[in-house]
Amino acid sequence: MKKIFFTLLSSSFLWVACESNNEKVTTEEDVVEEVKTVTEEESMSYLLPSPLQIAEIFKNSGLTYIGDLTNSTESAASYNTKYSQKLNFGVYSADMAYCIINNQTQSAINYLSTLRELSEKMWMTDVFNTMGLSKRLENNVGEQDSLTTIMADLQIRLDNYLDENGMGYTGPVIFTGAWIETMYLGAKVNQANSNEKLIYRLTEQSVVLENLLKALEQINEDNDFDELIADLKVINENFDVLEESEEAKLSDEQVEKLSVQIIELRNKIIKN
Image (cartoon, rainbow, N blue to C red; front, side, top):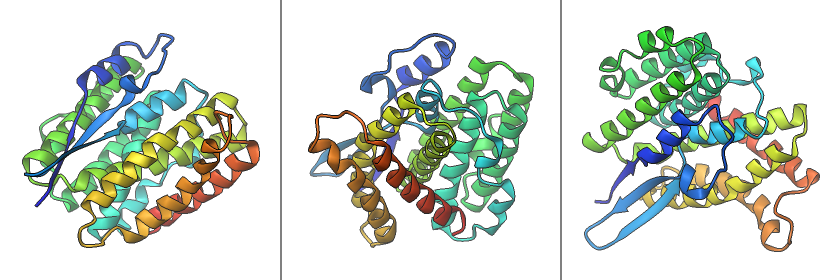
């Protein structure tokens, strides 16, 4: 049986927490989180950023706050399958990160409460009970660096919890939900006000998607994720043109096609 676990690069989170108010030059090393797949016979690594890191990168490229874009907290009660709970735990994690980087503390607290609700359904309550997160968020209203550090702390504890409790297969699914939600937010904000830097960030996510697909395929022993993988492969086809062109980003028409597909998949997930 393969064991999959997330090893968080603490230097990446220190970079996010300590330099959120400064001009940053983003490199692949700055933003990756290593997902290691270990068997008795092989060792494989997939590089995935955390939801907070993607949100920070998008924020620095013009991801503005639009309040009604995120998934409603009221929808959480309708997620009754483990599959939908894991994906939407990721969606809400990305929404919480989106609120934190935009100093929307009360909304972040609301999403934290929703994550706790889902964690109880997924038997992950201890992740939240030991941190006093709500109080910490309330005590740091308006403190960007502190809120970012709190979110990073939650991610570290979640990764450790999944590893220690034999739930490593849950990690890639949660990240999938978070990645799709962040891409959705980027696509919607760009549709509202086209931004060349944001388009570059959307285009760069092709690397993340390639590794995400590998991670999902690695855990898909029982074919539980066939539909999700197929949907992501359709989205991944949008990036094929980058190999055939000297352009480093997608054209406006290609970005719109990508955006439509991302939005459709995201809405499919939150209604699941």
